[in-house]
Length: 356
Image (tube, rainbow, N blue to C red; front, side):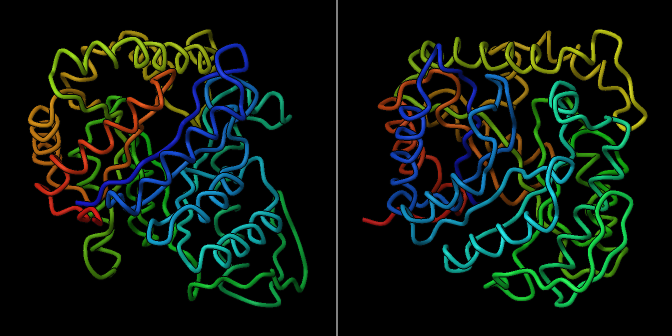
């Protein structure tokens, strides 16, 4: 299993200025090659303390590319629904070149109603815009002189520049939540998947659907699964819980607040059961997240047990993407946690060894 770090800003100006937040994030990125973390990942969200400091993951990952030499750079994820595919393909090609071919591109549908409302896009167009956008970006990266007449974007005889450094293009990831159809579609298309255990999906069943669809479509291997976790490792279980409890609880509350439209009467066929998903997250706490293995918090032995237990429960997965400075968790403690995890936990799972 490989272990990487992800950044999901969960603060606003009243909590921490943006320049301070990104200075701390890039300070943690500096540790990746030394400690053996396999990737750096960040999100695309807007307007709200939940994610709003990261409206363009390409920008952050470009900075991260200059602080690492080995770590992969993963968008987790870009949102075709709010982006022109011509612009997105060009930005992908540019970052792939700057990073020396280390970019991997995760795509997601977006799920926060306030973002759709502010961009003037209907939530009922989400799936159609996503599917068209991913396919148009794929073709722009793989082909030259591309002509497409789409429902949302059309263009004629376009060759996107810069051309990708990786051939035929950077690997694609698809963000999936809880519906079997999403897992199956990603498997059939031959894309890797990124998912979030905290949302309560029957992850073992969903991963099985993905891997079955992958093999049935004739792809080699069994695909790749990346799962996201909050992680905080300290010398003792009590010390770790005392530090991580309130930042994680605040993160959960901000997620529910940002998505509250789903529990206030909004519905869409593109988002079945999202009212139940968000209502379920409203009941989640630090304790429930740790108990179900969605948050890895504790001593090195506790965290190693949590990693092994979750891997066993879902039938195995390839990559863990860990939030290490969630909400207001202090920089120095996040740095110490990353070092302890790398030295005491990572080697037990065949992760990259730290460079000394």
